[in-house]
Length: 216
Image (cartoon, rainbow, N blue to C red):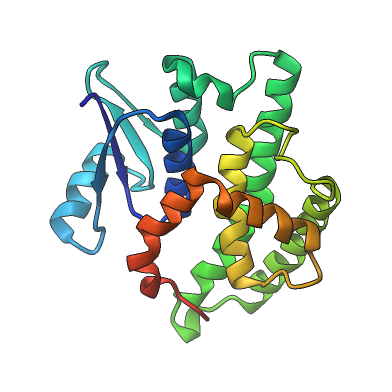
């Protein structure tokens, strides 16, 4: 098999790449990397010095790609079934890429700041940084409420790379700062995402590992 994805089933940016792979029906070999294993960590860091998930390797082409958005761009370029994730129309493609950046930078990263702080020792916690992240997350979610109030997907009627980005960002954001009635639009959009077969599969595969997620 030509494609190999180095990943962890709880890593949120891995979810983004997995959703794209499942949406397109592209065959690949999943390679779960346990960073707690020193040997596995050493091999992974040798391949990608920053040690960040996910990494997609196309063994036939002799190419490797870090960064979930770049992985999806590569899939869309190489596999016809994945081309739908980035529209051929340049204006629509720009909207998809902008939405992808919004979910990664203003939802996903704020969520990760909160989760990361939960994993710190008490003396190393950053309450002011977490408070700032929560405030910025609230602003971002209010924009999701506004844009998703009438249903559909992130940039219209078609599921795209932007939705691949939104799914893990919103799922974990809802875990760290439950939407409740405050963000009804975001909550309904998340429900649609979770019902999508590609994301439902990712969640099912991650389920055995959820005990590792820091609840508080």
